[in-house]
Length: 356
Image (cartoon, rainbow, N blue to C red; front, side, top):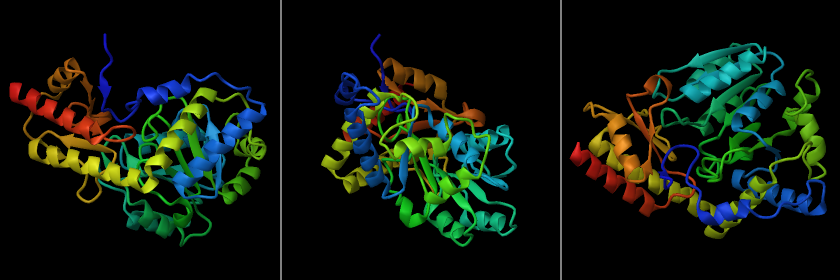
């Protein structure tokens, strides 16, 4: 059976050129060639994130780095800002690590506002906050610049940001905003197969990590930093993913980083325009994601039947996630997708809806 084209928010479409780069013959992970590969990847990720912070590479999903971030960071108490399933997961991760934490949540479809962040931090209870930049389950993009501005008023608080479905697709200037940890896996905006993750880590996070015990080994930032200084990883990483990331970075810079960000804005506008004609956008107005659109269903269309008919035609979209299952659907417009891909999908969706 031929595989459908992916318009789901992870894993996203991977083209043949990138797949070929993952199939290159590997290098020894303690060799000079590996260190060269490591440095190329780190330098490229720093450019994409507009940061001079150290980049750490993880052979894991982003969930691994979400756990690592809180285990290496929280000394007092963590405020987990929740606006959907994946920001809720970060709270669950924090609590499962035995870390003192609170969930500060908003209604599904709403964004986390800077006023809520300020109100929480003014209590003096927290030394760490977690925020999801782009909540994949609801199609909400939180105002990370405004949130970061608030956090800067509290110099003892560090800011951890999940950029899983925005990194490499949406412009975020990590150093300018003062983000202490920015993390993502590579199967979304980076447009690579799943199984690898990256994060930027500020100096003050490493200082905190040094004072914290019982962090384990695999995700200990200080252990990772020790090897990173030698352009190495503590354990054998997924070298094919690093080769794929190097290839993708080369394509990004060839096309132009700013062009890539603008490209994703145009794809988002195309999808949102269609959704507003046929359904409605689930995300709060003004906070819609530029990488995934979550659509409501005011007309009661059979969304499962619609998705199945699309699948028969070679297109895969996502249904609602968690409590939104059966109530919404999601279209991803990130990574390697082009405008022609999006228009082909939307035309096919028009045809399917006409048949139903």
